[in-house]
Image 1 (cartoon, rainbow, N blue to C red):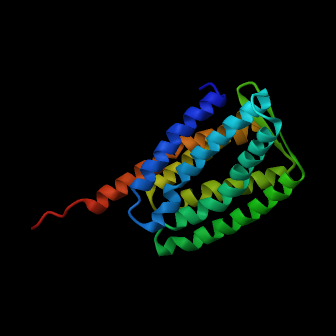
Image 2: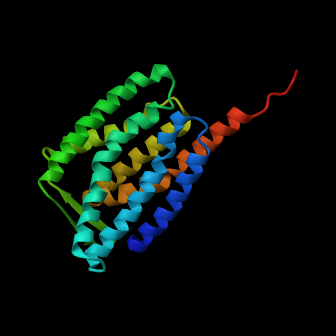
Image 3: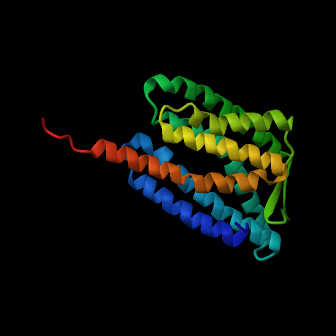
Length: 217
């Protein structure tokens, strides 16, 4: 896939469509945060299109800077805060205590990310991805905690599709980190957005199970 503003727009449309489908198939209010995750990730891709346009000079400089900040805040602050509550809301009560632990990690990660963002951010086009710069304190431990906060809740879930979603995201994160650490923020978020189709499929399958009529005996 060739990454560009146009690619982000296509990804945004596809993932937003998946999010709308997921919300439509949420049978209970508790499922809405998880169902809305693809909507958040779809909006994230639309925001990055404006980052591309800003770096190319196709929109006003201020618009591009706002887009950079919005993209990084969603990726580095909102997602680690969002993952554990969204998964915990659809998990059985006996699985919610681990979600509280992941939620605490998410709060700590968000605080560290906010501190790094406050020092200033940068973005530049590197080939077919955008290289985002954030001055993080003790970068490697912070990145590890970020992975725990965003992938951990899914890996700890009882529902198999959610576990596979978390495992796939963890695997791709490791591969991208090995290939190009500077590409992580941009490319992994694209992957996570596209992979969120698994959430829509998961809610569809739950709905089929819940609505399957019982055969009289």
